Length: 53
Ligand SMILES: [Zn+2]
Image 1 (spheres, protein in one colour):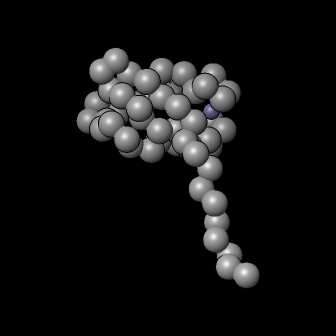
Image 2 (cartoon, rainbow, N blue to C red):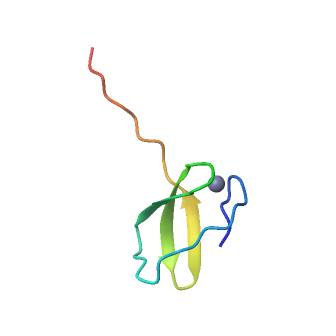
């Protein structure tokens, strides 16, 4: 599997679960596992930090 952002090779653990968030070891982008069979990754939505008013 390659990172959709930087195309680095990502080694996935064999017990990967649907919906799991993994991080690219190269660029650090967060990737959501959409499906494990067949394998599909997508960029995880950016987490908005809530700093309040
Ligand atoms: Zn990457």
